[in-house]
Amino acid sequence: MRELTNRRTAEKLKQHIQKLEQFSDDQEIMEAYLSMQKIKEVGTETARGKVWSRIGRESRSRQVYTWFSRAAAILVFPLLLLAIWSITRQKPVSGTEMVTQEITVPMGIRSRIVLPDSTRVWLNSGSSIRYRLPFTNGSREINLSGEAYFEVTHDQSNPFSVHTGRSKVEVLGTSFNIKAYEEEPEVEVVLIEGKLRFKAGMKEEEVVLSPGERAVFEKDKGITVRREPLEKYAAWRFGKLVFDETPMKDVARDLERWFGIKVILTDPRLNEYRFTTTFENQSLQQVLELLELSSPIKSSYVPATVNMDNQPGEPAKVHFSFETQKMIR
View (cartoon, rainbow, N blue to C red):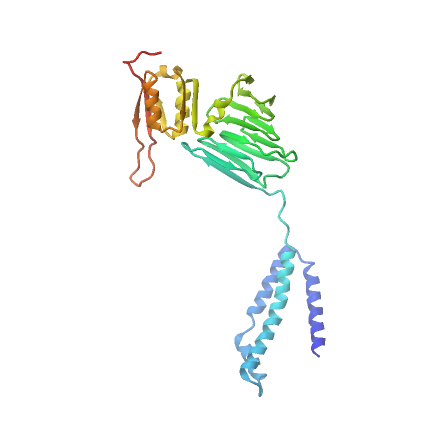
């Protein structure tokens, strides 16, 4: 008798699943909801009455336990089958859906990161990169704002490229520095080793660089390529600030990023004053002292301010002016 009942139950479940396979997504949800409602409709008083009517002479506790176990099995088993069937029917997530990862380095900070493909990246102050995960999915694409040095892991099946909005660098495995701050008119690429293709401008002007070459893109001039010593262009990742006949306006901009301060040139003549010097892991105070000792320039430091609610206010400021007691070079 029990075997006949089990066969009938199995047949009913089989027919129920076949019926479910004909349902749409909305119908599947409604069927699950109705099944839950049926469970809620089982009243505790009715169940208790059935239990006591079947107790007879047997142990009351044993009968209660046995009946509730069977009731639970009868109610839960079809619902469990329905849940498993619904899960297996879920649509798979599209493989084209990707997650964007963004890393930003604030002013006054420099950082080194490792990408998912083991490529090493040094980010200069005020720079950020964005890339999609999974990273090695036919191509490795980076969006850069600011300055970064790359040591790219070779992977011919997944070409590596860096986009700046105004230019694009394509490589397979190489070491290079790219500088593309949004507030600066030029994009600069310096190739240390390997080989890369540099595209820039609306017309996508293109050049292929060899080690030791520096390419600069300017909107009005296009791309120019020069061969020169390149150590100074990537020295920042070792904590070095290198100025080589650098105009004071560019020195001021680099100091702002390096130390997270605001630099103010009080005399227009300072814009064209040039510096040739190297600072290595030195504090702002040390840099200001050395600048004053080696030039007719005077600096004045104004500390950063803090608001009443302990939130950052104005950043620290440095005012540069000519010192009249010294002769201008």
